[in-house]
Amino acid sequence: MIAVRLALCATLGAVLSGPALAQALPEPAQGYLCCNMRTDGSWISDINYAEDGKTIIPAGTPVKVTGYGRHRVNVEIRGDKQRIGNDYSRDLDLTTFAKRYVVASDPTAKLKDYPPRIRRAIERSKLMPGMTREQVLMSVGYPVSSENPKLDAKTWRFWLSSFAEFQVLFDDQDLVKQIVTDQQTSNLVEMD
Image 1 (cartoon, rainbow, N blue to C red):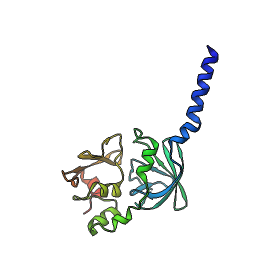
Image 2: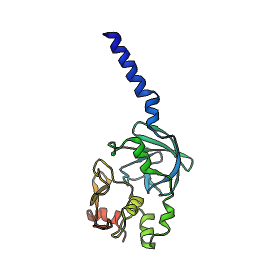
Image 3: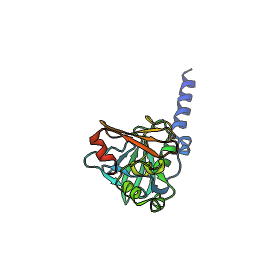
């Protein structure tokens, strides 16, 4: 009985740490950052809080995926090592999560064709009525999947901090109808 348990543990350990797990993740690749993301210099969280000391890495910045860790995608951006943390979207497997943030096509190619006011909003990580879902994503990143399990939902919830929530409401044409938030957060999120 003990021998059977030891064999089972050894087999399970090999499966969890061996080639089977490694095959579940894509090979490190190069691409572009999908959207404006905030970093503290080494960590980019999927919640994308706008905290003091964080800087924005613009959508379209070249990214090289160098590996994977527990709930993180290790990347190199402008020669600096960073980690994109899956802090609030853990219902997504790491491959799906990585493909959200590191995309094959440079989003700035689309950005140049947007109307000037939309372009300025995206460049400033701001939102405005009339934006498409894609434009919202480029500007403020993905809504975390723990709060937004379906990207086709009429409302997306975001946060600038633990206490500064804003909601993006879409109309039937999937354009931003309204941004719902308090006055202080509105000044930080909405294009004037």
